[in-house]
Image (cartoon, rainbow, N blue to C red; front, side, top):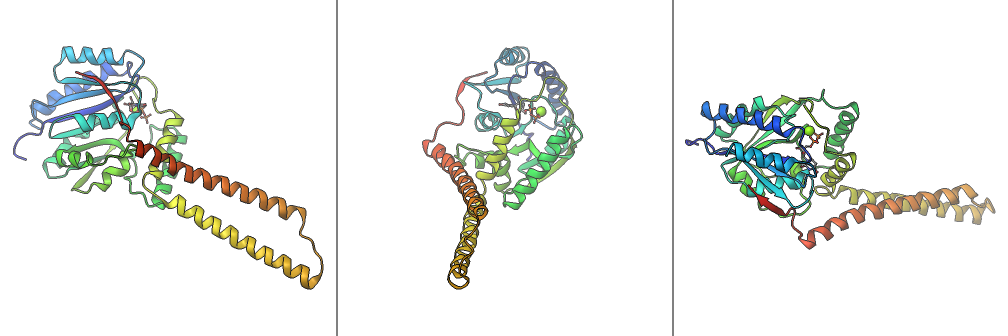
Length: 314
Ligand code: UDP
Ligand code: MG
């Protein structure tokens, strides 16, 4: 790349009034510095995606836009969740490269020059990867670790400890546009795109204001999405479990008949009847639940509903 890249920061915001003014200040300083040191073109910009906030987030975005022409906004018509808000930015923003980062700037701004160097060096995707998880609660740390392990076992390709702090070049962004699925799990799709990739390690900071917008429910939803969007393993697993249980039941039945015929008696006890009813009932319900989960996904996909609706742009 001989010309300097026009970089866009895409920042999803949901009820971020506490952090936005400081975020804008820090990004202004960063833009100034990156332009001055010749890392990015002067047309580079920041685009906040307001994910249907109920507080004064949009007002603050408008204010940032008035004060500094490099700041822009996309307002979604309602809350659609982090991944969709991110997609809204990735799909619509121009420029040679897009850097996605959270509004709370928990991800380290100081590694951005290194990320840009990888881009100039030919990488199309640069993943920001956390090398420590000190700023997380023990609960989040343990669940995250467990989750990556499960994903790995199910054959889903993700980059452990990489969230959505990432730099993507134009070619990778255009490739991403070809993925039309409604249930989009970016952390699974992006490693599948191919291209030359790179990783940059950093320590994640604590939120400097406000509190997490990822409720436990949202986190769980994302986790389930990651599995069901990329792996049919749970379906194979229930088939296998069903088969095993049937075989055992068949063996037991055979055994009872033999008992009855040749040894005269030994009516199977109450416990074995009840236990097997509950066991099978439970297994069947679980199997139905898993199948239902995939079915719901197919249902959502066939409707082809939009991932996000843009109300207005700045
Ligand atoms: N976010 C969003 N929509 C939502 C929830 C979160 O756009 O429904 C944004 C939020 O404003 C932030 C980013 O997603 O910029 C990450 O959220 P947060 O920092 O609360 O998550 P955590 O860092 O605690 O995982
Ligand atoms: Mg955060």
